Length: 503
Image (cartoon, rainbow, N blue to C red; front, side):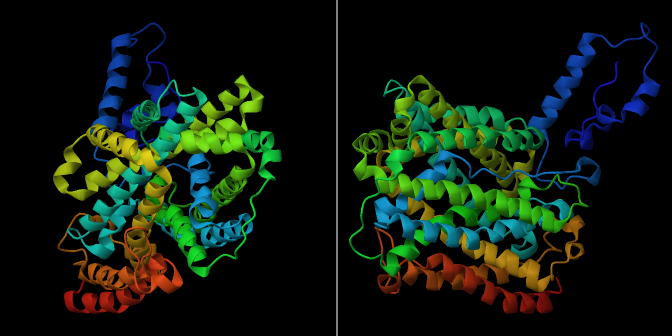
């Protein structure tokens, strides 16, 4: 068989002969015209790789030979129109001015993105996905609790993104394609691309932000004059509204901490942790700040642009973007389609993380092909997204609040374990016991910390369906309380647990 290009991928774990070095394979190649492999052999090779992709238990720790040198990391999933939707909540839901909305967006993004940056550094050094790493705090059995919460979070985010994509497709077709049909299209496309595995997803996400960035810059440029017509907010912003909108912004970023190392597991173990942190931090921070601020500016300008307001009433974010680009004619519609396709860079990574979380949930699920989980979650997301699209902004606000509470408690616990208990020593993780419940922590300290935190989170919640006594005066400070209390409670409880159990 002729030499093939050298590939470094997860396939090399199971099929090292298919990815041997070019020189070693050349030594085994027969002379030209002698003993050449038939086309069927090549098809068989492809068949093996496809089966491996669909059946391999990816929850296992990859060997060092399967981890490639990474010169750049792309976590710019925030560079998509769904970030604009989050920014629009400031003026539309919490009645904040553009200035106040932007200040909240910048400050809370700077703060909330730190967790994902720190936890992303664990992937290259340990080779463990995020929910496998959680077992070193929560234990083998009790780690299923954050896994379940994380599955709900990832599915919810995908539903939000599919709603935005469906609105964009419906707006660009002037209603010929309904939002529900658009949701199905985005969901199915995301499902198909997610089958490719990490290596393809990494390349896809590295490149997908380019058309997203170009299309959003064009939209902002074409609609720039309309953005200047900001509505005037007569009353000064209340502290409660500022903090509640801050919760929304933080709720967008903190959940990345629950999948951060999923996206860095295959990085070279020798890569600098500072480098991984900075790439992750800036890759999430910069596009989120810019696009959320753009969303706040768009929402603040809706009263001064009747066509934009009509588009928002009819198709949400997609309708606003289509109205902003309407003066560009057919080219404007093409730009909206580009923005829609850029959403796949976000959903595909989430689908990949969802399948890993399913396999981490229970040992028996590790034997189920990943494609089965992806198909099942797609079938669940589509009706949820259709329902949420009926009252999108209210659904988005309620959803983001719920996930911010648990994810803040989770990152508080695992970061306290990594930074305080283990003192950031990656060699303190015994990778050989990742699936041995008898040698992992019991997890009582972690669960107890979460329960203690949530006991005081409830009075700090401010939502349409419930306002706690503390939140009545302060606004929603639930995620701040969850993070601080879970961190403070975990350290002494874990030290006590380790002393009593010797593990």
